[in-house]
Amino acid sequence: MKKLLLGLVALCLVPLAFAKDFKEGENYEVIKMAGPTAQPEVTEYFSFLCPHCYAFEPFVQELKAQLPKNVKFDRNHVDFLGRDLGVDLSRSYAVMELLGVEDKVGPKMFSFIHEQHLKLTGMDDIRKVFVAAGVPGEEFDSAVNSFSVSGRLAQMERNTQSSDIKGVPTLIVNGKYKVKTGSVSSKEELFQLVDYLTQLKD
Image 1 (cartoon, rainbow, N blue to C red):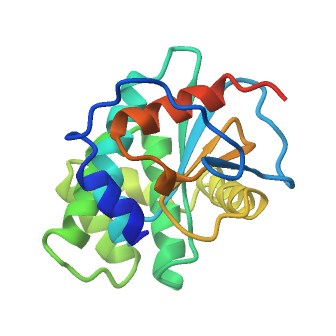
Image 2 (cartoon, helix red, strand yellow):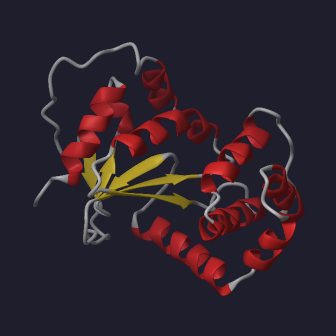
């Protein structure tokens, strides 16, 4: 991940003059145990506890904004960081999705952890982040243990296992291609690699 972050520091400074010839094994890996998605899709696997994910966040938002309309963008919170807190944060992300408040609460969660360095000890502290972001506490309470949130939590765990996610942040394209972000030298090249993979036909 250090190599990734060092590369990202210069992403906005290094213009890309030509499209690169991307190669399996060098720029991306094929996930043998995962099946392709029905439509083009980019999924970021991340954790609110991960400092690399926090640093990667501006690039993820820009990537999401520039994707073609036919390409779906999704996020999958992993629970293998932080033990019980990691599971609680995965559940909290499922709550954000259910309530449609990812754009409000997500940045606040990253800020609380990585900018303000506030220690979260469990769901009570996570609830406070939602309230600070403008989400009524009653809405959080009604959603946090709902069937929909529990189902989404289980789905994210299955996705993490089937995509063989060992570290974050990780980009998976079309449910089949794992982006090797350390192989790119600019933001533009990263976006081109993702675009290439959304259109790749085996």
